[in-house]
Figure 1: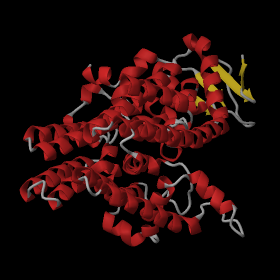
Figure 2: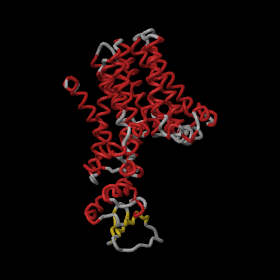
Figure 3: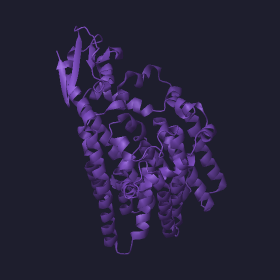
Figure 4: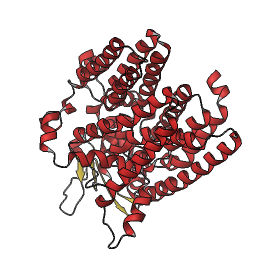
Length: 475
């Protein structure tokens, strides 16, 4: 409660910016694979639930949360979207809280949080695209992950072992929630090592901390069938993947520099450079490196801040490698430019980095001038990203509108649904089939794609089509 009272203004700004950036999702529904966790096969069978099955599941929390929510929310899809927004706010507030505890600067922490909230490149796939399954797999676990990192910092600064225990416990809980947490492992390895180099942590404590976090991560993810994409090891992946170094470096180019500026620069070359703008990505990487070095020169006087700064920068490289390994280099910056799920963690780290750099260069004894300049920078960043987010969400509005209208059309018909019901509809509408399989026990084989060759028996059969965004129900 004390945190909320002391930070009420910042909290209200975070909620306002979140609404301003992402309010459209409250009027959308999941699309495509967004209904993945509505499927019965992706819910939890509590009767046969074991500790081993929990560890083997790379997405335990998503399965658990949908097992709980479906009987409550049923086919009221807006409730799921409001739940998503609630989780988003929880993550953003946790992020702000952790940064404020580490840096003791409300303005810097708020600025980084705003960068995190409204980053188009890193956030759009997770939040704005309708891929609810990606959101629920990768976002809720950030709350214990951020808290774990905070306790690790407090352990090193205060030399209190209980903070390390808290850190490890929160990290384990985040790993159990979602194996996606393992992408953050470089932070938990590099931070103790950096403090060891600066003689703030003993060799023994550094070794034990790194060992425990690493072993826990590998033990848990080793039970995950997705831990070895394409069934080969990290070394085999390195040997088999050409231009891997470019893939790693250029992720930093795309996530650390405004994509709108990159596109602008590419279009004004003679001749214009085509997507994915590869000739520009290395110069942009060098430019980002210059900014980071200038930030280092400004920050280096504060040893504690410098350790965090260098930890985050160094973590970008192994995290970039892990994203390539996890997704088997599909997608990668050599073939995809712009927003993508591979930049989600990068957007979090760069939010912290740019917040630190802006503070280092702009903070003066005149606090009002500092705040005014920060507001101008924030406004520029918001305009650049929010307008792009709105534009991209408008482009993909039709699939969401179709799914939403289809669900609304199905609602008054649902009392007649049973295990023998047959649903015939175009594939664009059948993306919602897992919802009806779960709520009304309609077997998946009873969902039939409508086309010109479809034959059917009218008994207990419901036939749908669409024109534009309007659903046509054939009685």
